[in-house]
Length: 477
Ligand code: BG6
Image (cartoon, rainbow, N blue to C red):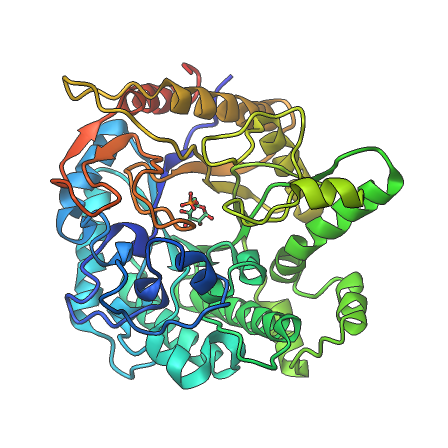
């Protein structure tokens, strides 16, 4: 089995996890820049702790990251060597508008991505751009409290106008918000939100979700006006919830848990909130600040395709004992009990290749729009041998198993899949933990958790494996 001609094989990164140079080129400070390495990272990411500036007591992995800002030519050349057809990257909002809503965009920032896109096209690599990947300008967090405030929509649109006009001849594929549903779990990371005493987190989160959904719809409309041939997608942190048993209450709980996530994609793909969502919000006492104009905009700004990340399926139960014993919300972010049929990565993320086929089918049944897998991969601890080689067979095994299921979804189920950009083709900073040790790459970067390392790049075994996968369009796995 192989993929159809024109399939977009490649890899995906995010600006704050690889670029570094956080205060160069006129770039303004962003939410991710103040998220430290270590125990304070998670409280900041979830909005439980407030940290709107950097201090000497913490270290900040996004500041240098893997220095791709200065080394992108070398890195894109390596992507070209692997035969990438597509590179998913995000633009750092504050490189373009340092304060988030400046009237004049920062030319140095615009020029940086201009050059980067040219470099991609040199190797026949199609850029796929995430407009907002876990970064909210600090200036807007101070001014508005991040996405708590409706005025964020206009700021985001200002940013979109600047990048759409500038890159209309260089970028065809766009994503409005990375893992938009993550806003419910990582509120600072997803929306620049810190909960103040007395605030109702549910109310705040759904209000912010609505503003992002309206902003996304407006961006889709604007993109189509400026670039009639472009395609704009939404982006879901996917992975279906399985019921732990066939007890109907477990089945119902799994359906409800999935709805937390579909809430966003239903709105972005269908242009309206599902009926159950209104009832749910009513029961929770959540009042959306939703106007008739918002509802009309949502209808007009539906996405062209559905993209998603997939690392793992999830599992839920209504058994209180099991929940107390296994229901954790640590690194895996989503509260999920263990699935006894699956093994897990070193970071506890359960590995379920068949779940990718389930997810692809569920999303297509639900939306009937083209699909794009924009993240999938294994975070692991790599060992560099004395001769410099890295034998990451575990990563190859993980990816092979997932690609096999993807091939079945296309060839046996007939699903329209546009591409596959695995997460972190080059080692980069982990979003959830801020570590370097949790590596995803085909390309190793000599940078360690304590900040030491030469930043030199080298090829792992998986580099040569993926090159062959792309060359044979998925036939030789
Ligand atoms: C996704 C994000 O949630 O998962 C990425 O879009 C992130 O930004 C990736 O890096 C893997 O997660 P982590 O925490 O292992 O980096």
